[in-house]
Image 1 (cartoon, one colour):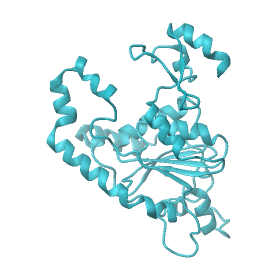
Image 2 (cartoon, rainbow, N blue to C red):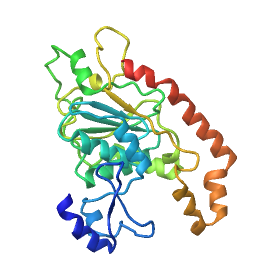
Image 3 (cartoon, rainbow, N blue to C red):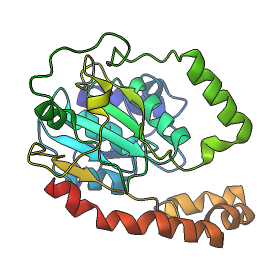
Image 4 (cartoon, rainbow, N blue to C red):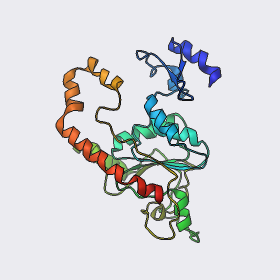
Amino acid sequence: MESQIAEIEGELKCGLEKVSWLPGFYTIPPQVQIAGTKAYQQGKIYGIDAASGAAILALDVRPGDHVLDLCAAPGAKLCMLADMLGSTGSLTGVDVAKHRLSACRTMLQKYSLGDRTRLFVADGTSFSILPVNSNLRRMEGLTDLEENGSTFSEWTSRRTWKDRQKAKKANATGSQHLLAPSEPELIYYGKHSGLVGLRKSDVLCPAVNDETCTSGYDKVLVDAECTHDGSIKHIQKFEFWGWKTLDRRVLDAERTDNLLQLQVPFSLILAWWAGT
């Protein structure tokens, strides 16, 4: 990356300043937009808040770890986790909003980081699907995988007629903005995520408290949705969008109550995942 700094600086027309306390991070002036640059479009750089990057580093991800991101959308932290894991371990992203999790899928594909990742639309407070390595322990001796559509083939963005009709109905009713379905919905999995060739009924079954489930995720990240989207810089955007928009999108009492209901349960589940 160091060899490309000068080229990126020339394209952005500004200097990149290293963040001394955050390895691999550079800061640019707030008025500089990166979305239209070749470096961004080609996946050489991506934007992420320093605080988000610090949360990932604090997780201390090691090679081979199986990592769970329970509030994965819109995907910057997920990409950083995938980048750190490289060609080892696995990454599972979960989010309650399907349209936001779809943005995660787009980011993973753009930066070619989704090879060992799977994405579930689900309620993180009740999500209980173990990493693939744990499922494999439970499936020892089950080698006669069925070939009638009940096993995972390589993921494709092409949808079946049934899926297209379901999405069309959801768009017509506006239900794509509702909370996640009662059962986790798998919307993406990478070629080396461990799913290809396995039986869906075995992989998608929830964890159970028995002696055959000997391990869960090595690291769990919960960055629950913030009341004001996380930072003063985000709030400053409303100087341009208008304070009525701030009142509608951030300060609305009903939204704040809903956020509280989303945030509180996560404090109760971390110990369970860490000990599974």
